[in-house]
Length: 201
Ligand SMILES: C[S@@+](CC[C@H](N)C(=O)[O-])C[C@H]1O[C@@H](n2cnc3c(N)ncnc32)[C@H](O)[C@@H]1O
Image 1: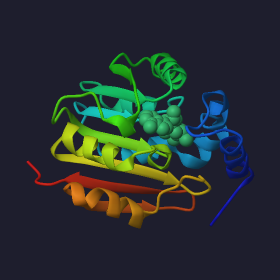
Image 2: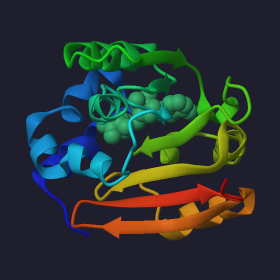
Image 3: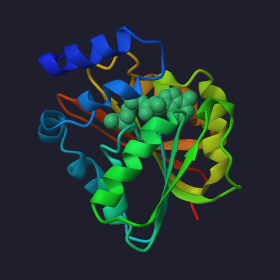
Image 4: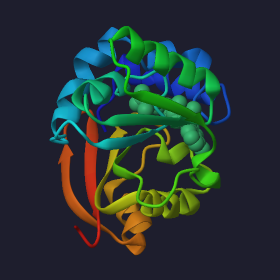
């Protein structure tokens, strides 16, 4: 498994705290080095968003991916959902600084259910989050409920993350809930794994 000094720092910040990843250490998530290596814009480009989607991002942290998503759905809406209100505050400030006004935030535990009506979203996005969610089964059931049929569920799992979920684990978790593997891109740094909720529209 490839590692770097940055992975090591991120791992240590997680070790000194219980889950979730501590908001006070968000500087290690939203830093220029990770941005250059991780290229969040490229990851979001790969989702081929049309511009009017309703997107749910669970566990945005300080908004590392959120600004990239918000910019690509100018006629849609991005809903941020995080268990730590402090993280939501940071993410909101980041998207607002990027000039995006199409964002809402909600605080809660994804492992306790998602407070949205059925079939609300076209896309759900989780980067380095699922491993921290205490009840993954409830989280996935919630995602299957709030995504529309044919909706896209995307996981990004970074190497070096102590809570990283393998592609096999993701498949075992989501496929019983009606999701079908649509694609998977692995690089030195991360896996991006895409599922569709069956049946497609
Ligand atoms: C390791 S950080 C990743 C942040 C961001 N996605 C990124 O890649 O930079 C995990 C995030 O998930 C959130 N989180 C952890 N458990 C959660 C839960 N049960 N429900 C909602 N959010 C959760 C944390 O508060 C944190 O913001």
